[in-house]
Amino acid sequence: MKLHLRFFASIRESLGLAHEDIDLPHNIKTIDDLRSHLIARGHPWAETLAKDKVLRCALNQQMVSVETALIDGAEVAFFPPVTGG
Image 1 (cartoon, rainbow, N blue to C red):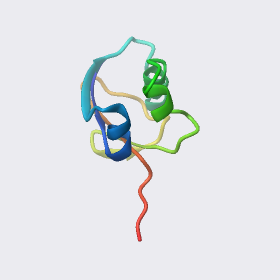
Image 2 (image 1 turned 90 degrees about the vertical axis):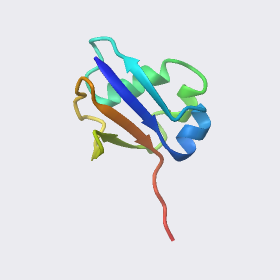
Image 3 (image 1 turned 30 degrees about the vertical axis):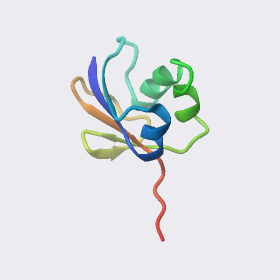
Image 4 (image 1 turned 120 degrees about the vertical axis):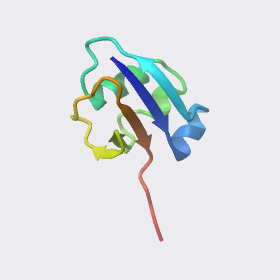
């Protein structure tokens, strides 16, 4: 499965990367699987995307939960939580 990944705000800054095209193994089925796969890359991925950190995710520009199934050719975006004032 091929995906286009996008990273925003502090996630982009921590990774030093705004976007990436990735070809995933067949066992990666959900947003949560993808996150685990990226964490397995080690530093800085493990720290930035750690499971104890609250992140928002979007699939094809629609906010989704971590249980959402991935779609071949989709765009997946990771965002830090948004605060306002």
